[in-house]
Image 1: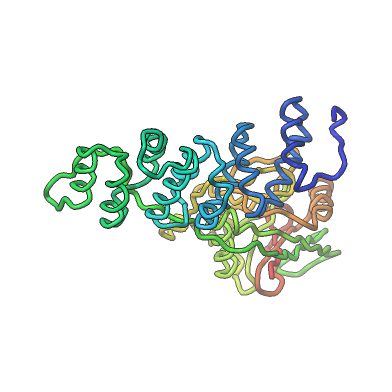
Image 2: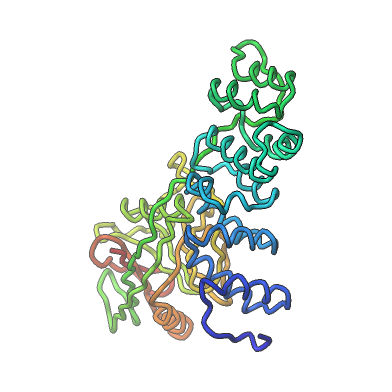
Length: 377
């Protein structure tokens, strides 16, 4: 273990490896386990990972597992594993804003767990009321249908008559009558939109030599970078990236000291390379803000918004400069990027470039790092 080398990590062994790596501060192994979980976590293993991650205080891993559980909340609540969770885990899940189930479904799941953990009591005994009292605040009672409030919550006797009256008053009070203060949230849950993981290819080229008035000089080197787009855990950022590709928006791609600029084939050569870049803040609601569930690192792709300009940054072992939301991973092509970095450092005139959905771009006047161009299909 202390050599920080081990055999193949598997789905069955990863959480045990994570526990040992954390206990004995084997940092490289700890990083490998976290990365393995991010890349291989499935709905089937999410509950087990969530429970163990919560116990180990591996918050980011627990959050990632909770996202998958929330997405299939109905299946989670119907399964036997939910009934075996401890109080802390149950509260964490029931409080999530992204549960994909009705509020009545949340209440019924909470009640089912209480019955299971109060020796099967369904006669509203003291044990039932005491345990239910520990999680009832996780249910957003003002959002429950009146019939469920009357036939379920009221009859269960978890709330006092005064508390039930306040819930009814809050639910049915009409403006301008002020609503009473209650301890139950009325914020509607927002299930996360998501898309499946999918591959994206970037066809990259570099011109080693001079570039003069749109004509390639000397040798041109081509390479392909393959990305695993994680719309399953970073849906908003992945969607923004896809939209910008589709709409031919301009954005840089950076790897260490190498900066690629995107220009479409029908673009005129701008006098100022800063001109023409899409300002994300000019598009209402398009600047993504979502929970950072993937860990940055070598080969991970993050989307950075700085002063309205979008930059894609491929994680570098030494030279990451900007922080953003990780939404993809490079699955092939890192060797080409490293070669381009060496060329950038050793040669005086190198033009790097990419473009998407159209032919190769024209090269701007001049040469060097300021004239870059990749292609994404």
